[in-house]
Amino acid sequence: MLGKTAGGLFWMFRYLERAENIARLVEAGWRIALTRAGDAENEWESVVTTAGMRASYREKFDDFEATHVINYLLRDPDNASSVMSAMNAARSNARLVRTALSSEVWEAVNECWMSVKAVLGRPVTERTLAEVLSTIRTRSAVVRGALHGTMLRNEIYNFCRMGTFLERSDNTARILDVKYYVLLPSASFVGSSMDNAQWENILRSVSAERSFSWLHGGETTPQGIAQFLILDRRVPRSMAFCCSKTREQLAHLEGEYGVRQPSQDMADRMCQRFNQPITAIFDEGLHEFLDASIRDTAALANQIERDFSFYR
Image 1 (cartoon, rainbow, N blue to C red):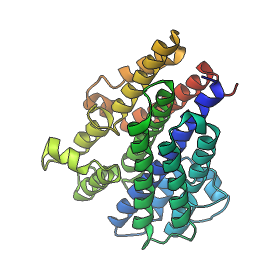
Image 2 (cartoon, one colour):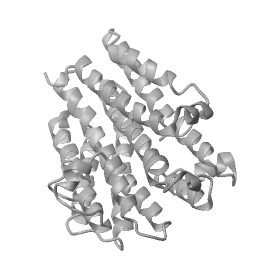
Image 3 (cartoon, rainbow, N blue to C red):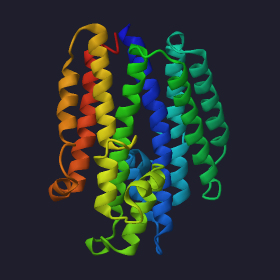
Image 4 (spheres, rainbow, N blue to C red):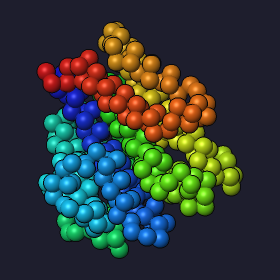
């Protein structure tokens, strides 16, 4: 496969996952802001910071008012990382690699783009936010369903899935970081009823509340939720699950091409970090662990681009 085609597939699904993940990040911030009795601007500021868009946002706005943040993250044409920008990029990449996709996948991407463009064609208010976020999540899920149901399990599929899992791992780390490191007003709130409510909102934002309840009953603790979203390989949005699936796709590519790439060794080292108890991660510092994971994910993505010559 041409490196340019591999890169188009990889980035098409990274952008699709990114659009959904930004929507989930906005939902996490929105739900947590609702639990705060006072000014919620700090919560929205932390969402922008964790999304990595603080510098560009401050060039345009002086405050972190909810409507400004929501529209900047979802639909602002000046924001290259907004949901609408990510959807545009995903569709552009899909057009580039259209001959490598089944007709169902291409149609799903195109319909996703049109639906999201329609709901983001006007300013989003807090009243309409839930409907907009639901549309983004639902249309993204349809694309994934078309991929799973119609594509051969070959190198095309492998590059698509790698893009998804790398982006998802990065997002889970960022959502956890929003909650634990930035949003708590002080250490005195850890373990309080407000703290637990915010952790439960994190579970809702990644559609994992019911799964967590099945495994843990009614017991909700910060360590239990962190263990669930970081280390539990049964959870499709956990960081350990995403790392193992990325490594699995690289192994398939080794079998396809007969060459082991440096990115495989890097993925192996990353996955080793998830073979430790959650208590060890909390002792290290949850924010420090998440920050290192975000950097490692970015480094792995860059290595994959080099290994498979995406820009040749």
